[in-house]
Image (cartoon, rainbow, N blue to C red; front, side, top):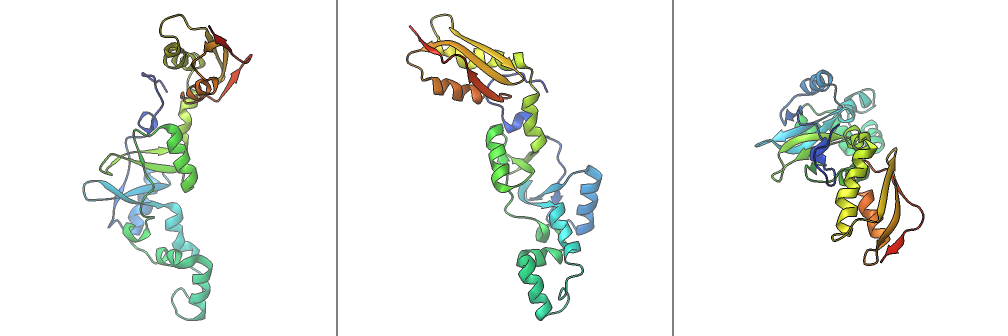
Length: 228
């Protein structure tokens, strides 16, 4: 993937803009067909003017199969209590659901397009999801981002990464003279050497470099001295 501008990579840089979605009244088989035709594992559920109100996943749909042979699924009493204790009320409800509104997980876990790739990765990890609907300021669907999309920043060429670090991180440290920090990148690992201005903490420089899209790690060799 080619990047035309420098700066922290955002979700908007890597997301998929063509997204399939369903309405709240979409029925079970319609949702299954949509997932199969588009070869996706989740679909956002929309309401109003394209606002994301939930997400239906294959796991939500499979609740029906999971409960198919449960004792008490169609009768009350001890069997129903056993099923409820094993799977919870939410699972039982989804097993009987017929529309997206009843099947969906809500509220949807979403991300804004101007969020950084790192922020999106943290949201995914905390929510334990593989994809995130991308929304605008009004909560309307703008795209979708997957784990694979977030990893595309690591496809950047080493020299592209090095050029960004030299321009956006190192050069501003030396506004009135030639930089005395050398930048090398090999397979995404950045090596910094040279001297930094005495007014700039080395940990800050390392943090700024780590924030550059595609950086795997940062080495400082040898420990940088202070430029006088």
